[in-house]
Amino acid sequence: MKYYKWILLLAMLTGVVIIPFLVLPEEESVIDQIQKIEIEELKRENIVLKENNDLLDQEIVAMELITDSLIALVIKDQQVIDKLIVRKNEKVSAIDDFTDDELYRYFARFSTKGTTDRE
Image 1 (tube, helix red, strand yellow):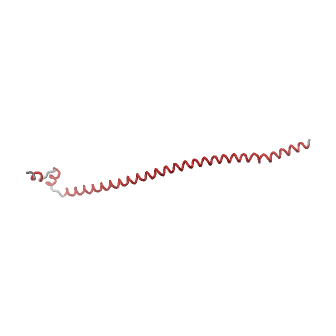
Image 2 (cartoon, one colour; image 1 turned 60 degrees about the vertical axis):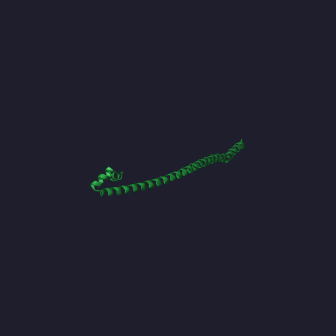
Image 3 (cartoon, one colour; image 1 turned 180 degrees about the vertical axis):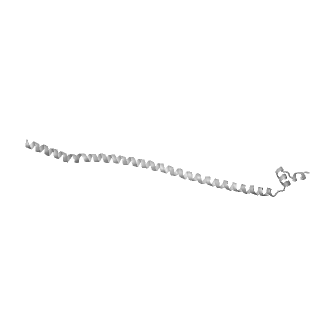
């Protein structure tokens, strides 16, 4: 009987020592597999984000081209407005120098050429 107790005790100790070596590697392999799966999912997500980033970069380039063309149109319109303001100011300064009779003829569109040129 004494030997059975020692054998049982020795078997239990052997089991306690061997089980961690058998169970822990399996748990670590499961953890490694989970980490590999997570890494693959992150790689796929990274690829999708890169594609979205490339699309957004292309949209930015297109928007910059549109912005440049609109700026050019605004500059052109501003130049036309400046020319019109100069012409208006020239007419206003010319009208300021008119006498009353000249103002009447100017606004009435009265012309002496029309009555004298007829034959």
